[in-house]
Picture 1 (cartoon, one colour):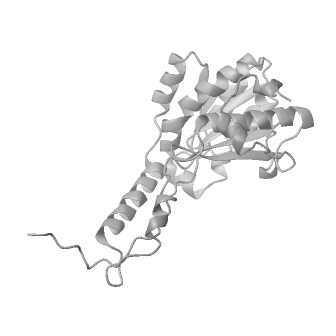
Picture 2 (cartoon, rainbow, N blue to C red; picture 1 turned 180 degrees about the vertical axis):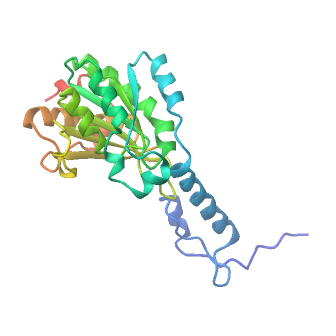
Picture 3 (cartoon, helix red, strand yellow; picture 1 turned 45 degrees about the horizontal axis):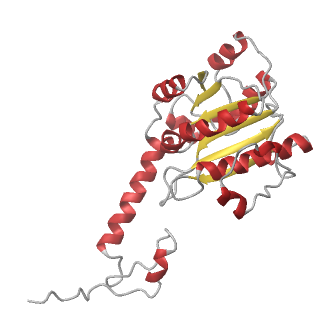
Length: 267
């Protein structure tokens, strides 16, 4: 007996475009509703996005991985004591806790050029999945170019601006913050990188930062993100600034070459 085609689902003429985008288009319909499969897929994506926000990042595991790579690191905390406060009070996520500030002030301050911050942000999955792999590309590139690095700072419940006080403490020229981005329904583990030249607490603003976003398996690759970041570093060193006056002029061709060798020295 020949199995008949399901005629209850109306075909959507946009369906062929689903091969070109992860956006939810061309889903078809059953009466006035979505087909069951499309509805279930949406609920799953929504659950993954919520989990990315609410499941805490395992900072001990992250520190262990850095230790195995022989990357000096320290764990700090924002003034947001838990995830609930973090979500309701973005301002507290931009400030170090009193205990973390004291811990920093008690440590010696050797001269450094670069401070790297890794914050959970709004997606613990993003940092869990991508931070270590990206750092394995970034750290050797910076050290090979002669930059002195502070210990990598792992910040619980941190927002982007929390790097300003840390960079100012070390008097670092370059502040690089890796943070979990607000999850979307097609990318719950997207990581962002924020770069600030001469970051200063209470003085640096979002206009002073450059952002490289959408770093995940179906977005920007680690190598492509590194090329963009090194381009910005080179430009910041020349212009002595970052942010809206520093333009990312990397081309698609340059990103596809994925050649980062001596990138800072290229003209």
